[in-house]
Length: 348
Image 1 (cartoon, rainbow, N blue to C red):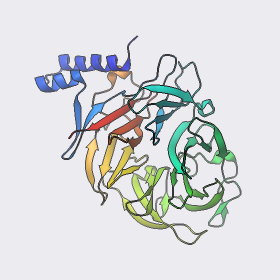
Image 2: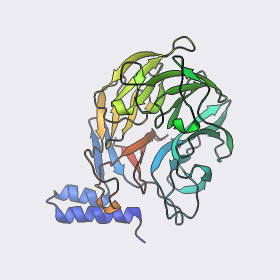
Image 3: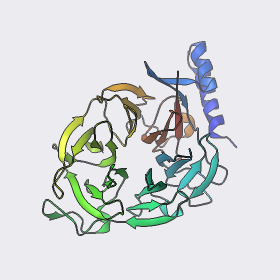
Image 4: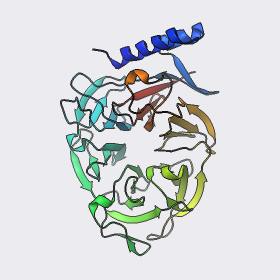
């Protein structure tokens, strides 16, 4: 059986043999030592750093998070060849598979984040198949699920006639406990829930003007600024919001457009903002939201449905989510049918 690692090396060997590469670059390809980024932000690329064991198979890899113990959780849609329906695969901090769970999310494993509440860690899931948000323990026990707030209104009008009108893609957490939910694949509202999962208010709705969003695919409470950042993906921008009086739309604060193509989600690490972008790149922004590095830029691409051997070493196809790991490296999951998880290790 050809493992992803073996396939990568065979692909690299093909490039080395077929192209007039320098000896150094050819050797780097063969060793898997592709470097991406620039200046102080250069990373060694390790494609397929996480792979499922025999009998399990990635679908589209769409969500990633890490708990305090170092365990890494990947949400995916489940590959056709998998013998189990589990949509969350769990790996140790050094990349070893440990277990799988959450068969209820098959076909819809999407947004995934961990939060500590009263000293206990929990997972928050977005299921785009069943159109639900859910809270679970770290071992996958579902504590509650929520569907569309069908009784709620925004600017005096009802938002959802049925549960099928919404499709949540990611959540974010306010320091005071509230949960933000982006209806990225539904009607493009962003909602606020209490820490117990009760609907509280809607903070913005669909459109392209200031204070409006289109496909709010990801969101993050940006501690650097004390504001909510929304990946306003179809508008090709990040938009920042500040709270107002309860029941009123939140205030538009700023756009970030430079370097943004189709931003999917966010994570922060100190002064850095990490932005996986569906248009084949992962972007790093500094404290002023200026681009400091574009990582593994593969745009434009037509490789989503291509055979794995066609993927280009050091180039992303469709980054969908990413996180900073505890060791400072970056883990990226991609929206490709057979999944791909890439680790970017910072060069010192």
